[in-house]
Image (cartoon, rainbow, N blue to C red; front, side):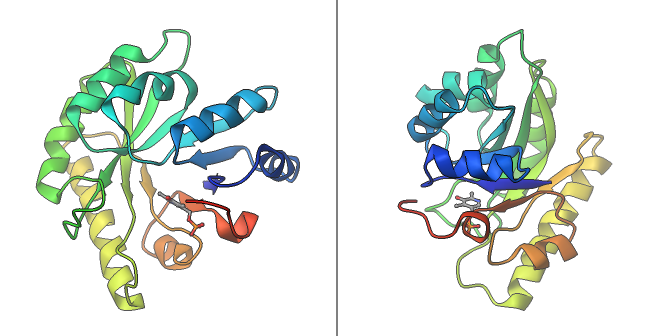
Length: 200
Ligand SMILES: *Cc1c(COP(=O)(O)O)cnc(C)c1O
């Protein structure tokens, strides 16, 4: 699937992409996202949260999004589960992987994936779907390939552990072709769809 990443784009740009056939949109900044969700509430959009999750801001995410790509703590999972409205389908969740241990970035190390996945699987209002990654900036083509293949292998490992996962969220405007070759099933594309953005 293609998630059109609309951070830094006005609601009118989202409406234009919707008219061109896009239905899934990704946002990083909660307040900006909520304003657009409100403005576009008459459109049948599937919203994806792809930014850092602050633990005191989980409720609007649980109430307004269909997917979260950036889970990295069981405490956040518990809050999203408790706050997911009964009237909505289960919230689809991806665990963000931080393979290189970059401290400025969210995500869990490989050894933390299985325990977090098991914690998510035990929560009734969440549905664990797989893994998400943002590779380090300035990686070579070979490095990117190695990175994406390692994340795909971690997805296989989750399945071996009995987790029913089907999604790898890998690839952005600059690297989606490599990501897809390495097994991505979900690309998050911003500038290649919308052109340059004002912030983010
Ligand atoms: C901004 C962003 C994207 C899209 O990036 P582009 O290079 O504009 O395609 C994808 N994923 C995440 C997590 C982002 O923050």
